[in-house]
Structures are given as C-alpha cells and as structure tokens.
Amino acid sequence: MTVIESTPAATRTIDVCAAPPPRHPRPDGQDHYTISEVAAWTGLTAHTLRWYERIGLMPHVDRSATGQRRFTNRDLDWLSLVGKLRLTGMSVAAMVRYAELVREGDHTFDERRALLEATRRDVLARITELHETLAVLDYKIDFYAGARPASERTAR
Image (cartoon, rainbow, N blue to C red; front, side, top):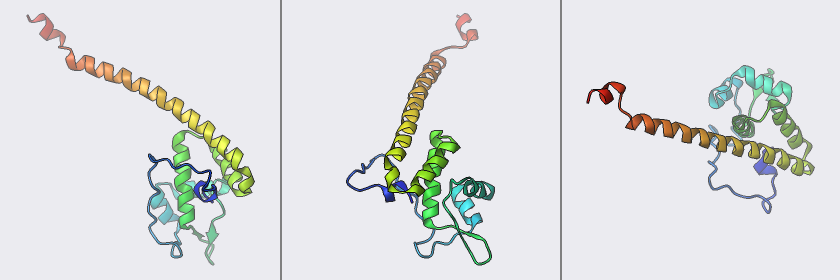
C-alpha cells in the first residue's frame, strides 16, 4: 500500500513540483520481477532488498513455486517511496515504523502524517542550511573570479 493509494482524495493535496512516479517496466498483471531485476531497476543490491524484507521495511513479497521472490509494480512503487524517504535523511527505524503504520491500516493516517510532517520539517531545515552554504560558496567563487593573483598585483 502506498500513501497515494491510502489517502482519501478529498484530503489529498497535489504537489505540482513533484515528479510523476517512474514508469513500470511491465504492465500490471504481467509484473513479476526477480530480485535481480528489481535490484537493476532500483539501484539497490539484492542484499539490501532482502534486508528490507527481513527488518519489515518491505511488505510481504510473493514467492514463486521454487521459493524465489516475485516483486510487483506495487513493490516497485513502495521501493521508490522508500528511496525518497532515505534521501530525506529519515532513519531506518522511522521508515520501518512508517511501513508498520501503513500495514496497520487507515486508522493510522494521523500518525503517518505526523511522521511525514516531522521529516518534512527536517528537510526544510536542511534546505535552508544548504542555501546558506551555497551563498558562502557563491561569495567565494565571485571573490576568486574577480581576484588577481599576487604576481599580477605586484607587477605594476
């Protein structure tokens, strides 16, 4: 279950700056991927995918008759969200908690929203810090672009 699927349309806000989800390699109904295919598509290692499943970050992944994991487009969507959460700096424990809340059902909307709002505040603080850092870099770049080497200053 993804946030988009579980959020009522009446309360959902659309972020026009958000990128659309990546296209799936296969259409629904024909979406059975091996762990190596998912690793290639996500950039995660097979070891990481197994670890995600073991710690409860991945929902139950179906298995083939021979016991091989069979991922679906829904799993790819979930992994895409997890990747975005990782980029925010959200801890693995918080991501696992979020996954648990999703599995618990709709009655956890408020707690999920609170968790995401806290993460959003952290991201905004980091963005502010990065803007300040960028301003310092721009200042130094401008300084060096306008500065003459010492050898040129004393040559006159």
